[in-house]
Image (cartoon, rainbow, N blue to C red):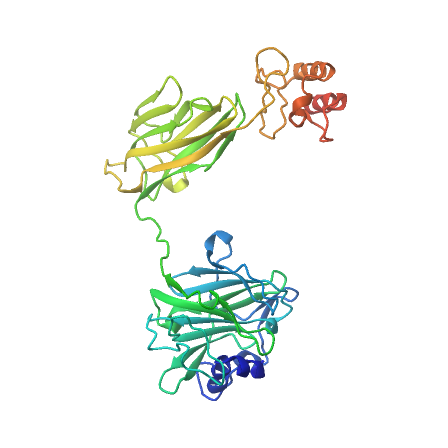
Length: 442
């Protein structure tokens, strides 16, 4: 790889110059390899980790997609997608590659960082090494972070002699050979703790004599990233649990209204509304904290409710809600439930400040089999498993439902919605399902 980097440019200087100087990790350009410890094998079949104490995020939702590179050059493990996650102390990049990775030598991933957004203070592509000119696309790279064949290291550009120096270890380096992904973690303090910085990505582990696979692509410029960690709310917020509701027709589900980031709640007032009067209705409200004084007004259509309560004691620390709403489905369709808390105070009557007083969740009224017995009542699913045990819709599951099912099977009145009555799971509704329902009841 050293010869290959001599052909493609500046990364050889990264390792050769720094290999001669004593840095944070010693004189070797390959500190982990020279120590005989190429990394801690967290999973010997799929993952090689050469990390310190930094811990990257694990959930997909924690990563912000930066680049989706739709071009597969077939020159090596070139970039597919690149993500970022930022904390107060680290910057993490996650890379997905097009080609299979068998070990760390299959990649040589570099992140060029212009920490001061000044092209005059870092490597800017005019400092040609040999016959190769890097495509810095408008940045002056103050630092380069490398993972794979020539890493995991971070180096700083020295403008005075036009080379890289000050080799330091990455905060985190992990390659997952099974998923063809890698994660690079960089300590913010190592790269001047920038709030806003420019980046350009390069993957050099490609065929000898070829240029890097750049992201963004050559000529497409660079990316500017601003640190914007999500600050936890400091004031009260409103939430609904669960955050989406599904209810069959003619059945009822519940949702809890909670106020977070407060102490105990002694008084509260809120409104709740549905935006589609044909799909669902609010049928009941149970108030939390056992209020001494309260009023609840549900509109005739069931689309809105207004609540005021005082002399209560809602124990927020134990996760107690201020109220529980009952929502009944009417016909298949979709609507939204919106709750707005207009007032909330502690036990002494001191009002809580709010960061957010309103929240909205989707409500889906599922399609059901309807009335299959001709008695005017739709079949129901008492346990919510998608199978309608209450065949005659009278609200209970008894032997009369077995009789109703037998009659419906004989008459062929439920063949259009077989999945709702397939009690034995064989994909069809027959007399054997009558027997299966009977066995469940007895």
